[in-house]
Length: 293
Image (cartoon, rainbow, N blue to C red; front, side, top):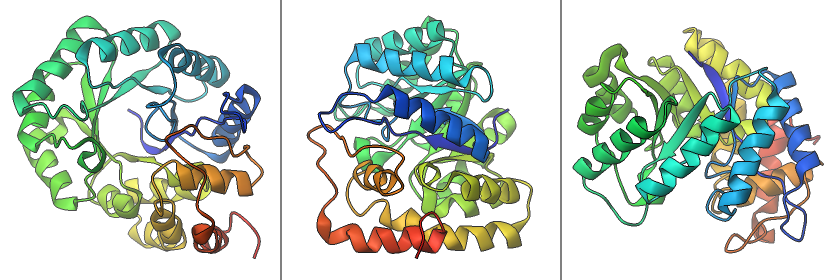
């Protein structure tokens, strides 16, 4: 069982948009040394929407090889076509990923029955544990708790990344599924509270910037130490908010650039972080202690 802070890792790029493999390797090593519990390559934060299928598979392979068994790798393999999700999940299985993260099909707005059949088909096709991913704010598709409960009965469906930001939604899933599924927060701003209510961890954007503090907060929250969890989370709330001043991963890549961790490459239609927001995010980074005052 994977618990604690799981980073939704950025994909470093050069200014020309090419993947920066050395920086990706450095980020992976840094996260492991800082206490990150698991790594998610090529999720939304990893620009899965703008890398090619070949690059997608290469990033997963590179991550698995670089991690070398030190922490689990949960490969982002979602797609809005079931056949594409099966193709990516098959490649992740071949690469040696420990599990896959499967966002709900986006844009085409499937029914709840369509969602069930989508994940069921992937489970039948590929023997790899699945983490469901519900983020209706980006996909225009909301996987309801009743559908999660149906899916939780499939052996390979082990967890859900719940990113509605609605704590009541997490409670509904827990009530319907019991111990049948692990719950991970997908919303940094409410992740501490969700873990204190019984979620097993968080798949985090903020962890890209403050991996050690996020890991300590998650450890405290999942062990029921509310006082310490909330104390650490208070220092991170500015990041939780300001890393979404523009669409993810625009702000988080700029912040990592400010920290000297990556170059500022990003692919269209994502654009560089707007100058007008630099001060707000820099202040949040200072509050969190990831850069000097």
